[in-house]
Each structure stands twice: as structure tokens, then as C-alpha cells.
Image (tube, rainbow, N blue to C red; front, side, top):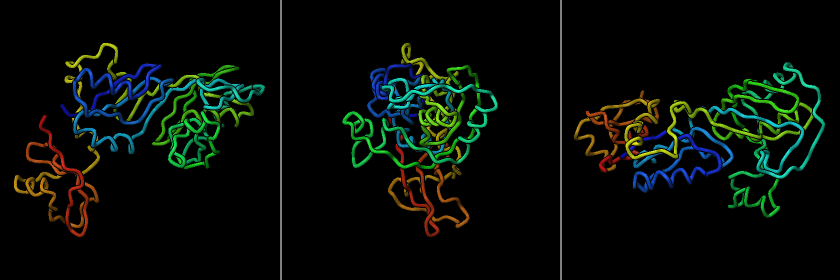
Length: 289
């Protein structure tokens, strides 16, 4: 069994908990997830099964994600979300839709974002959340992220609800924190739901509590889905043999730098890179169970 499955991760469990449950359901050990969701967040968690785990980077790195977030105004926490300890409070100014949308526009595009102190980022070989527990979390420098759009969904005197479409590495908690500061108050993320990872959307996601092996098999998405953006080149049986032995293929210089090599039955044989007029296999796949 190889492919991707779209799971609606419930609140209160880790992404690894989802993987563990799928391992028990499928009795397959080689399972991993594409993009962690915090226990306090729900929604789309794309899980790779079997050899598809070797394609996780294509789902995780080059895919737009969308979130629905609720932000509580007037208080900041050490984690920038509702799981943390309140570290600052401030009066909430009178808000207008125009003022909020101006702030949201300022946080859209290619921006510099300071990550939360409580996160899975590594500093000197340790996770930030471990350093935070020890009271040793450093102030991190801002780093570039891409926010494609922020849409105001609802607001009142104490809360703001937004939809965010963003790229890899964007922290919605940091957006919540910065919205508060830019509005002249403090803020933290109070609820978060991921509604999209690329073409995987929450309306198609499977409920974990009632998940069966039959559902996994019926809804498994082909591994080719993760690399549909690559040029697919069909190779013959002799070329398949060469590639599976790690040997390069001759190619024209006009090809893209990275391509998918498939056999005549449209099975993925390898991901290859172009170099010096040749296609060198980087990842070779064997799909037999």
C-alpha cells in the first residue's frame, strides 16, 4: 500500500499520534506526515504511506496552505497561542474594519516574520520549546516567509477571525501576535484549523476516530499526485533496468532540472536530475508490497 491519505486531525492529539494510529490500522510501519499540526490545532494532515513517504518533501515544501484562525485581543502569551502563559496585557483600542484590513494588508506578501519562542525550530541542536521550558529560549531573528492572502472573516471588540493562505514556514501564531501589536494592543492565537494543504482540503478529509483499513485503501491518493508539477518522461524496459541500477540516462539539454521517470504502465520509477547532458536518478522506487 503506497500513497497519501487526507486526515482531519482532531484537537488534543499530536501529528505523531495520527501516524501511530494509522500504523495500527494498516499494520504498515512506513508512515509519515507532511507538515506538523500542533495539538491545539485541527484540520488537514496529509499522511504518506509506504514508499510515498519518500515524496513527503514535495507535499510539504512547495504547497500552499490555508488556515482559519481566531485571535484574542488584549493579552499576549509566551507561546503566542492559548496554550501558553499570559505575559502581557494591554487595552484594546476602538477598532474599525478599515483599520484591521490595513494591518492585514501589511502582513501579506513576502514578509519578515519572527518565529514564536515556543516552536519546533532547532537552536544549537535543541528544540525551541525545550529551551523555553528551561527558560533559555533566545530571541530569534526575523526570517522571510510568504503570505499570499489574509481575509477578514469576522471581528468584534475582543476577537478577530481570519483566513490565511501562506507558504512553508509561516507561523499563524506569529501573525496573530503581530496583528495585535500593529493594532496597538496585545494578542494571541485562540483557535486554529488548517483547511487546505495544496489540493488536499478539509471537506474531503477522513475522520480519524472511525477510520478503517477499507477507508484508507479506498481514499488513498496516488504517489504521482505529489509530483504532478514535474515533467513525466516515459522510459522503456531497458532504461528502467539502468535507472534501477543507479545508472544515468542520456538526455537533451533543454529538459527541466528535475523530472519524473515512469515506465510504460505509468508507474513512477525514479526522480532524476539533469547534469552534463544526462539524467541521474536521485530517488529510485520499488512499489511492490
